[in-house]
Image (tube, rainbow, N blue to C red; front, side):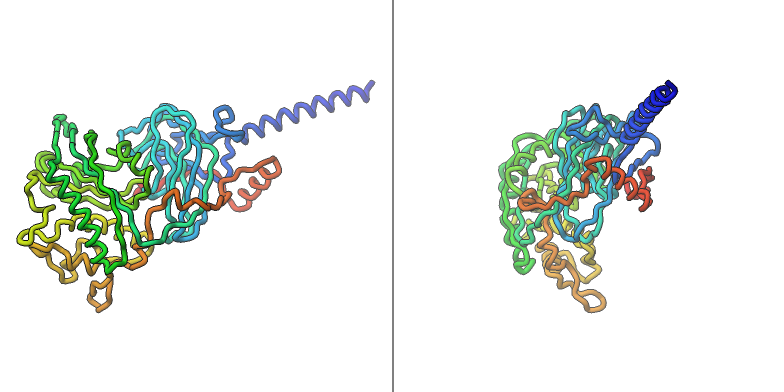
Amino acid sequence: MERKRRSASYYIVLVLLIITVVFLYNRYQGRNFNKFNLMEFNLHTSDFSRDNSVKYSNKASYKIQSNTPNDAMYVQTIEVTPNTAYKVSCMVKTEDVKAQKGILTAGAHISIADTVEKSDSIVGTNDWQKMELLFNSKNRTSVNIGFRLGGYEDDCTGTVWFSDFKIESGLADTSSNWEFACFNFEELDVTVGQNKERINLKMTTSDVNDMRQNMARFKNTCQTLSNQQISIEYDTFLMKEPIKTLSYDKEHGYYVAPEDIKDVIKPYLEEKEYDYIFVAVRMGDLMHTQVTQSSEWAGLGGMDYLGIGYSNIRLPNDSANYVYKYDAAVNTFPEEVFIHEFLHTLERNMGENGYEVPDLHAYEKYGYTQDKVDGQRKWLQDYMRGTIQDARGSYIGLNSQIYQIKPVHPSDFEFSRDLKEFDEPKNIIEELKLMFYKIGNNVKNIELIKEGNAR
């Protein structure tokens, strides 16, 4: 009888031990983020957890819940090969996601931490959908991939679930042939300023013809100025749907950000892979009534939409203005603003790929002048050919290789390779191995304060 009592006690203890182990394991699973670190702009504000009840596949999803505005993300460092195309994807579900300031780039998205490289953002309440980030590694050997609720310039509230992470490497197109899209918006119809002033401006038939002629000139002139180092193909589109919103910053005033028109141009970008986007719109009156004289720009470049270079071309008030018209006595270089804004993207690409390049606006420093009729043609030619002579007698400007570094497109992944970097443990043995690996390498799930200049 005493042996039976000991046997019963043994099984009771065993059952309790199993229950305890299962409880601890489930608790561990709820906070097991594998190789991800946790990053918040406002510490101890968002709740990070593994959710076994809301999930896309058989693995618990990665959940971020921000009841107070915050910029929060799961981050994993991935080793990459320089100058290689990569695609990061995941499944994402959102609930009541809102951007605090209403900045259109904020929401649930994939990003490269401490950069502005990102996927499209999702706000509101949405069921599971696929999200992708395409990027070129440039001269980097590692990147910090973030699955984020927030934004580079804004914080968010709400809940997001991420699942089924994947990263692939592809084969980038290294030809020097670039595809351009020029979207000519026929109408601007916006409400701006504290007084909610309505601005309604329209292109004329002459304006549209000017834009089309200048794209033709842009193609030929780019090829000539670069000494045939780049070739250009292009499409122009007349957009009947008005621009309804504008973005604003103190330096440039009002402008058309990619997010202001992305829903309108997205079908065109899905139909064909473009390497650069021009958006032409009449907003000269808005320039004079709403912003300071220092913000009177004809073109605004250096932006990008999902890794594709992007510029504004601002039409003046008077459609008879010669700024975009060819006239041998007044303006022989009407396509100059198109070339100038495109070169801002190549200028930035040079720096991001580890090359030195002169400031595109510093023509006077190197002895060049602005011609009243022919603009900065000579400066732009030498800039594109890399034949600017510096004080030491060296030739500087764009490196010819920069013409071969173009945006990453879905077609680059026709024969992709899955890197398995985000693969999760398949069983308890693999989980234990990963746990000991993390302990041994001092890789812990920690909360980091982002550097002040990273926002």
